[in-house]
Image 1 (cartoon, rainbow, N blue to C red):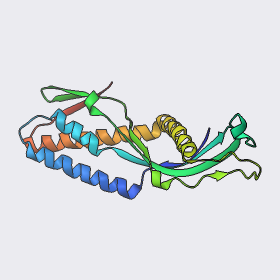
Image 2 (cartoon, helix red, strand yellow):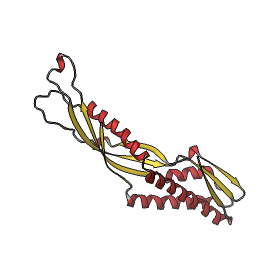
Image 3 (cartoon, rainbow, N blue to C red):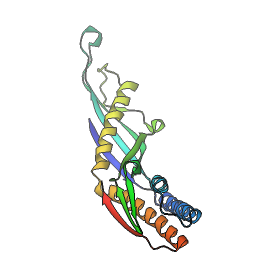
Image 4 (cartoon, one colour):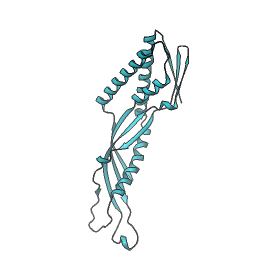
Length: 200
């Protein structure tokens, strides 16, 4: 199985809009809880808002081996490839994290950004392109294509997990929105909070 990663990037316009919506939500949350300390449930909700959507185009290449026995007479190994698109959601799962408050000092224990979900668009899977061999009776069916896409998805996951800049972007986005929430809360309550970050 071979994989060709065509693109894995954020749609800038959608990302900017999502950032504005998330920042607006954090401001509303802060104003609604004047005179209260930061709340871990709010921080977990903010991390969900901070999730990045990574759109990718993928090419899955595979080779179907010839069967054995009389029923597979005339078959030989057959190469094929198919294209498809999908969406990976990348962010911080704060259900694994925690927060401690000591006066005005807030320590947030944040796990590393990770792939929260990844899903190919089944409707985008193209008709497989098969090597031309008029004598080959080894057909490529839907199960073969599904298997090729499944293996290619594993390679996509590995590619994203090895993309340190993309994961760092998701991590920084979550931190920025959390800090915005705490700052808004401090302004509303007249308290100056200090935020410290600890990795898990």
